[in-house]
Image (cartoon, rainbow, N blue to C red; front, side, top):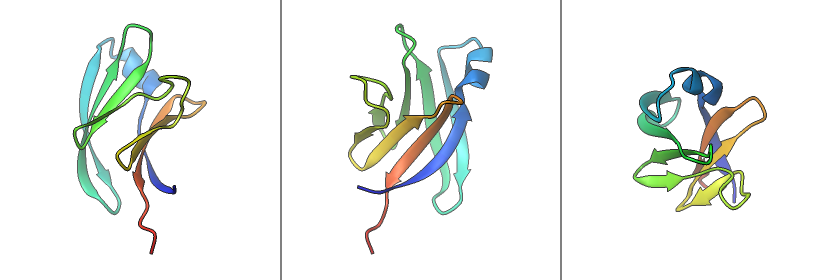
Length: 89
């Protein structure tokens, strides 16, 4: 399955806010304005909610974490990326 990927936030910058959750709106080039809720859990796992879908990269050692045509991935620089299933046209 192919995804269109968008960088949402650097989690190092999120950690500097010293909060457990943060809501942001990002302008995704071909999807317009999208809302994301970023959270950090007890075991230092990060999660993101997009389109009412809860995704947690590294849950069960899966990075990217895919569910219902959405995905979330954290790269080595701690950037959080979200993916939307690409149109297969």
